[in-house]
Length: 114
Figure (cartoon, one colour):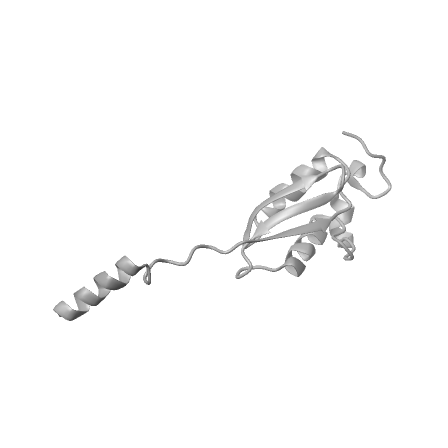
């Protein structure tokens, strides 16, 4: 019993038993977002997706930067999530049903506004 305790103490002191820190990757995805409503919708909805730590949409470039845990999700799943919100994501086009639910100002043919 004493040997087991000594081994455990040595392993803890050496850092061997420390929990693994969460690994993160970053993805940059081109979207069809137009306005602040689009930005809010994308950032909010992505926050509920499994494995996504944070997201930030730059309206000038229409690029959303997503920090995510690669053990829980991947870039393709993130793109698919964006299309289900109602927006294009890189080469994927929006889900038609989700697109129809967007306000008129957030659709492809809407003029840019703030």
